[in-house]
Amino acid sequence: MDQSIWIDKLKEKGLKATQQRLAILEVLVEENFPLSAQNIFSKLRRNNPNLRLSTVYRTLNSFVEKKIVRKLDLIDKESFFELLSGEHHHHLICMKCGEIIPIDCPLKDYEEELIDNTDYTIIDHRLKIYGICPRCR
Amino acid sequence: MDQSIWIDKLKEKGLKATQQRLAILEVLVEENFPLSAQNIFSKLRRNNPNLRLSTVYRTLNSFVEKKIVRKLDLIDKESFFELLSGEHHHHLICMKCGEIIPIDCPLKDYEEELIDNTDYTIIDHRLKIYGICPRCR
DNA sequence: CCCTTATTGCAAATGATTTGCATCACTGGA
DNA sequence: TCCAGTGATGCAAATCATTTGCAATAAGGG
Image (cartoon, rainbow over all chains, first blue to last red; front, side, top):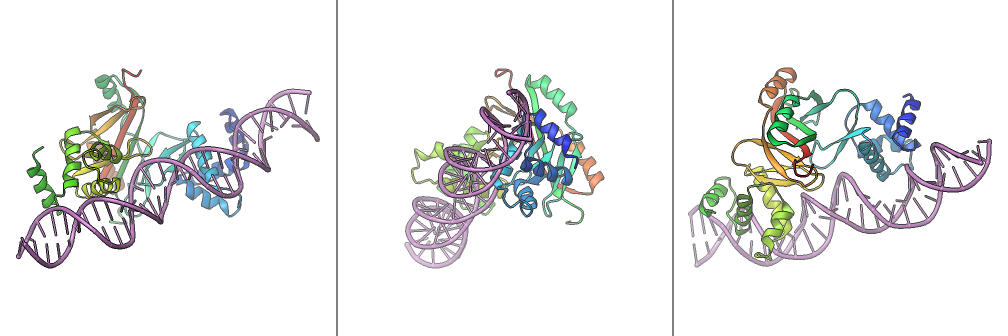
């Protein structure tokens, strides 16, 4: 990973470019996939025994706030976090094996309609589709 | 509320028609709106000091399992529960005042497409749209 | 009306996430 | 390059919604 790009990005958003933040970013970039705080923590801890789960949470929360990552509530308890890059999209989740597939967003026209009908200002939306993948079926 | 309908419905689903279950159902029917476990608990407790929050949770979970109510994760922490009746729909939530508006489901065609593209069996989906209502804006 | 079994009260546990505080590491300026 | 100020982190403890174990209770079929 080219750290300098990320160092700049962090500074640009008013965040110090610390070791822990860069390590967490590196995992998110390399996986390029939704991960839980615990996931990230486990991956990093062996080479970084001082890292705490609370630091991972604090970091992810600041990343969410600065729109560097997006928080997803895919399954009941644990939240997942994914890097905000590439196309806006949603997820299809296999209820048996937990596979997560990115899917594109079908809501553009629908939101226009909604604005006309409700006079709301639309800020954001969440869409998740649950099913069973061909292998688990 | 005509209790006998609900007593039958519970029995039909293999649940005993207990006082607490009927009380919880009554609140859900009268509000006809998504409520949290704590919401329901607070409404009932004054006339029912023995009721426990854990009973409300257990009841709601069994209702979800039997498809009598639907669980919604609208805001970060607390889950909401709403009676499963009427049209399948989703929710538009005002991020300032918390107003919740039911909206209809735009996903039928999209799911067909998804089945063709992914070979998944689609079980369910969740859609929430967040915005600011005209009054709060 | 009784017996069986599901349900509830109650208290304690759980698990993800957050927080308080002292220490440490980053960064911009000298 | 070094230093001070401030934000970030380690650490431990707290929080908060939700769940669970167990003994006591209530529902409902016979």
